[in-house]
Length: 240
Ligand code: BEZ
Image (cartoon, rainbow, N blue to C red; front, side, top):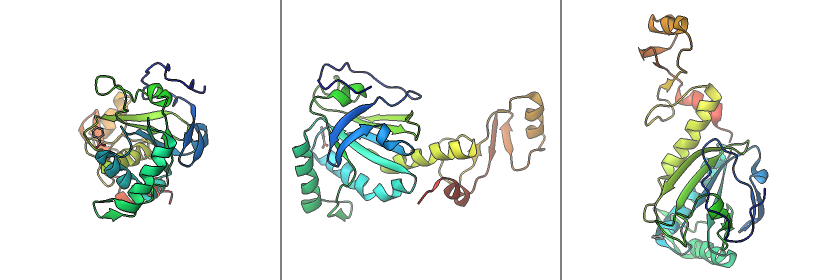
């Protein structure tokens, strides 16, 4: 379904496990049909409040400087604000020509930035939170998998810049869970022990608790972990 091209689009909030709402949009890299153009790839679709604002500028420099790292995990970036295309172009040129942040300067933003002056996409994705601001998108992050399903949603308010190490960690954790059939505990990073699926029978629970399953260690029958080395994680998920 293509979103109606006006701001009457109701504000909706897609949920984890839903298909990513589809739209066609003009971007700084040409027209995008979302999510069809990204089939087979992970995508981080994110919104920012406005062009030519400092927190957003710091975020774009950081995202752009990490684009190759995300691409190594088959992950593409696509941004959105409710500004128009010419504003986006002017802002991205300014970032490249004039702005330094955290040791990065001359940064060229090569991922698409969606123009959404009608707020059609922003409303479809629940990026407008009227209690925070009626006319600007909050800092939303949607992680969408290669099948076009929403796998993670994170929101930040206007004044809080995102943590990009966390966004990369989310990508690695989602892909690790899928590749190895495990879950990842609090603060997991590649190389930390992972959670094995909870025993589905008394026999499996007993085997694990009695140490009969190689490499699996249990705190209790429902909380068992195993090692996957950082090298094995990287070998399993890294594509580039
Ligand atoms: C910023 O990106 O700096 C910003 C944008 C909107 C409200 C507050 C800060």
